[in-house]
Image (cartoon, rainbow over all chains, first blue to last red; front, side, top):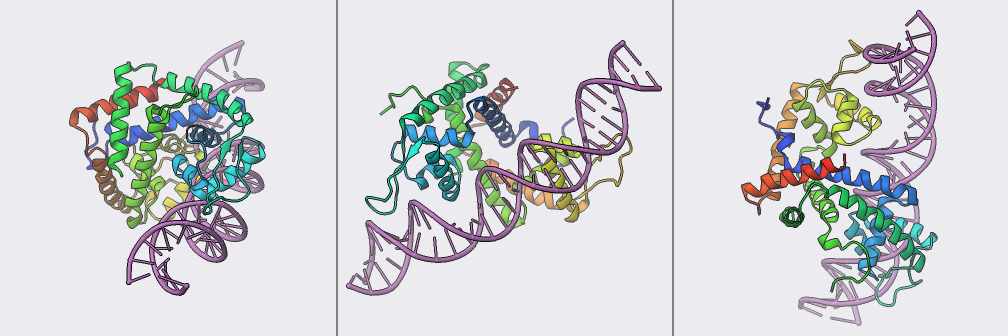
Length: 146
Length: 146
DNA sequence: CACTGTATGTCAGACTCCTGACATGAGTCC
DNA sequence: GGACTCATGTCAGGAGTCTGACATACAGTG
């Protein structure tokens, strides 16, 4: 049954299951956001911007786990869509603080509801205690990797 | 402190922390595998193939969460590197079972050790009970999303 | 047997995201 | 004040992955 080789057993590897769960979540989010005409990357940026208004492109990039070059083009499309606005020039330094437009806020509200529903589905088999425990464990893992 | 808007609170969102932990793990794996000249995708394929020898390209694709088109080109490069072999033509149907070569097995052994070290680091702050609990919670989440 | 459905391997094009590079602005140390 | 370091925004090019499409092979159904 169990493999004799000195490798990683997929079924008992936290790392692999982390990948499995994360991939399943992303796929479910894509499926839920598609009818709204929004991608996961767009949603992630808008959500982060809603919680931390005025974030710069580089800061948004770090928060959504993409490079600042990718966030650069992402913000351009979000500005074209009228979801986000940025000042023409920086007041101090080079940082251009981004903020949600009213339209962006409305679109985000719809997307956020859809994503919340996905998350509820994901947590369906867990108790409230499990949920708290999951937060603790995931935080510990992320912190341990710096 | 806590945002008034009816959105998702990032710090208490299991979904967001799942993404955080997963991204941190992938970055750590990339960093650990780079000195060995191996990418995370290559490693994942080899590891899966070691546990389930004879898997077809389509099956490998599903197990590593890429499309079978991507796995197709991936297998081509792994064959060029001499890590993997596939028969010229299928015995039955169209499936071409892939297997590790001795070289592929040796390269995987090194990579597997490096990745195991990363996973140990990730689990550094957790007890053995925590580890078992993490497996249960992650499995539940993945299953709930189908 | 023919027909339908499903799964595979493969090719082509498009898209996303990344790596590399450059210029600019702010802070630090001498 | 000048040199160094760091962070940011931006542009160009490339590597990896995806979507779309096609041909083929098997299983099930009438």
